[in-house]
Every structure is written in structure tokens, then in C-alpha cells.
Image: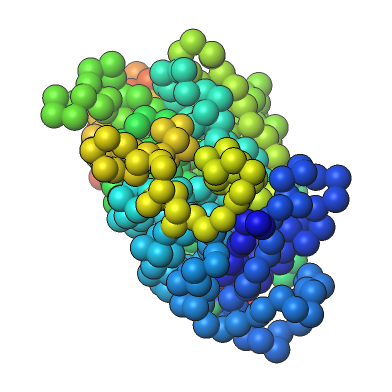
Length: 456
Ligand SMILES: NC(=O)c1ccc[n+]([C@@H]2O[C@H](COP(=O)([O-])OP(=O)(O)OC[C@H]3O[C@@H](n4cnc5c(N)ncnc54)[C@H](OP(=O)(O)O)[C@@H]3O)[C@@H](O)[C@H]2O)c1
């Protein structure tokens, strides 16, 4: 008996997924046993990027797919929050396993969706939701599971990496590169989710949850985008031996576990960052993504590749479908059939709760404690414009010193509009202290601070 897939969405990712499922030759033999059974779309008349067999049922009734008793796994690739959330929950309630690429819905409703899945005894897999074709979710869940993860640091948004890479190469402004990226289809007409860091925040929340074994409240993820990164900052960073990247970081903040949950306190943040040119993430350019993971005892491992696109994202979706198919196949001998049997069949624990593979299912109950950004200890870069008169550098240095901010370098780079342009790099300092010093500096007569960036 074939294992039946109901696909919600036939856009970029949906068409890529259909393409693989309909052409299993020379791929894993288990694919031959998977049948693309029904596809749900918004419009039946649209031309499609994939040639569908005439008997394949295309419908606008997505409810009929998630409740269809013949379907084992529902693949959600319509995107957005609703109806994606409701459809996933309904599929789970009907005993279907779910595969999704929807980081926005998982980052916001993951607790509700995974709780429902655990109760129903089904899997919700999401390899495609972070970094498209790069395997990172499954390595975190399985290959690296012996490690105590210390840090995840990644370039997880291709649009912003493309914009910053081109600004770096061409010396162009953010606005002009964004307009060009939109014309070329690398950036959306409404680029907010990408350029303001929101998409990267969704992704790091998901990765942090997996790496640190607790749920993450998205509202606690500190998020800054790249709109304020100027061509001048990129040029100065370059002179100082850095490139500027939008980094998403999740880090164990201290070895002290949170009293109630036993979970570590974390920093989880997204912001443009000066990255030394010799850092492994510095050479990740264009639309590519990369994720650096540091674990004890493995050390650092880095995952690099295409973070989006029909083929790469579908590669991740189909690997999740195959994972579920493999579990069902082993669970039921050579017969593969309806997923609702998993919840109601043999795979039940003594207490009656459904038994799920603990390396694939999500079992987090508690929320991680996230440290406020003011407690972050990091290095800073700041660009200051002021009157060009003697003693100004000394005055800035004294102010930083009085707030316990020690400086690695403070250099007058030149003149801009008759004002002295000074670039400051700090040692590791507490963010709260640095911000207090900046507030005082901003109150000095004719001083402005056009840019402040953190440094790896
Ligand atoms: N594109 C990528 O490279 C990429 C990479 C990683 C993750 N993702 C994620 O994958 C998901 C899908 O992205 P995509 O780029 O494939 O989107 P897309 O090209 O816009 O396709 C969306 C598909 O869903 C259908 N759809 C949307 N709303 C619907 C509704 N209310 N009822 C019925 N059908 C509906 C559309 O139907 P019609 O075709 O009839 O309009 C379309 O086929 C998103 O969550 C996205 O974040 C995408």
C-alpha cells in the first residue's frame, strides 16, 4: 500500500516538492512507495511550474485534504499564519503527520502545534523552515544530540545577505541595492520581514529551541535589521578588517541554570554585526546561508548552502516525508498505511500516551529564560560626527571610561560635511554601560552618532 501525501500549496516550494515526488528515479527507493495524492491551491487556473499527471486531484478545498482519511502526511507549503496554523492543527487532529516549511507559523504557534502533535501521536517535521536546503534541524536533533550546545550563529536570511554582499562589493547604498534586488526578484515588494530581521528572528527562535531544549518566546528575541547599515560603515569596517553581516545568534549566557526550569539563560538576537574577515561566516556571500554551531565536545561545525529556492527547499521537505515514511514502514512491517493507526495502534506507552521517536518529536514543555539585551557583553563599533576641534577624542574617551566602557581603538577617519568623523571600537563591554555612555555623548553640543553596530 502506498504512503499518501496531501500537499497544501503548489507555489515555489510546493512545485519543487511535487517535482521530486513525481520523479523518484535514482533517488531513495522508499520514494517509490510515496504517492502524491491530492494538492490544494487557491486558484485552479494558474499555470504551474510542474507537469502534473491528469488523474492527480487539484482542489481549492484544503479542509478536504487535511481531513481525508486516505492521507498519511500533510505537507503545508502555503505559508503565512492563517489558514496555515488551523490547517496544520486540523491535520494533526485527524491523525496526519505534518511537514512544513513555515517558520513564521512555527515560531509563533509552535507550542500549540507540537502539544497537539504529541497528544495525537504524530510528527511535525520542519527541516525546510530554517535555511532552506541546508540540513540543520535534523543534525541538531540527531547527529549533534550528544553535545551540550553552546552557541548557534548563522546567516539565515538570503535577501539581506545578498544586499549586504552587494553593498560591500559595489560600495552602493542600502536603498539602491534593495531596489535592484526587488527588480531582480531577490527581495519581496514588501521587504519588511527580511530587511528588518523578522524572518531571521523566527529562524533563530526555532534553532534555539532545538539546541537548548526549551520553548522560546518570539517577543523576547532582540531583533534589528539592516536598514541603518550605510555604505560608509561597510567601507570603514573593511578598512578595520571586518565585513558586515546580519547574524542570528543564540548563545548560552551563563553556566547557571534557571532556578525553576533547570534551563540555561540564553541570549537570542538578530542584528547587523561586524565579522572579522577571517571568521568562517565572513566569506558567506550572496543569497547563501550558513550556520555555525558550537557544541561540547564536538567543537565548531558549520553548515553552508542554498537557503531558499524551489529545489533546495523541496529537498528538505521530501527528506522529512521520507523520515516519516521510514518510521511508519518499520512500525508496520512492509505494509504502509494511514497515519491515524500510529496514534491508535501498537505505538502506545504504558500510560496510554502515544509513543513517538524522541529524537524526532518535540518534547519541550518549559520556556527558556532569555537575558535582556542590556546584559549582553560584546564589542561595539560606533561612528561619531562632531566639531573638528582639539581635545574632542579625549572628551569621548573620558566619557566612555566614566561608564566603564574600555576602548580598543578610537580614530579620526576624516571629515564629513566639515565635521570630524570618528570611529570607535570597544573591548567587550556590557551593552547597558555602552548605551549609557552613548546617551551622554549624544547630549554633547553638535555631536551625532549615525551608526552603532556590534562586533563578533
Ligand atoms: N520560496 C522559498 O524559497 C522558501 C524557502 C524556505 C521556506 N519557504 C516557506 O515555504 C512556504 C511556501 O513558500 P512559497 O515561496 O512556495 O510560496 P508561494 O510561491 O507563494 O506559494 C504558495 C502556494 O500556496 C497556495 N495558497 C496560499 N494561500 C492559500 C490559501 N489560503 N488557500 C489555498 N491555497 C493557498 C498558493 O496557491 P495558488 O498557487 O493557487 O495561488 C500557492 O500555490 C512559506 O511558508 C515560506 O516561508 C519558502
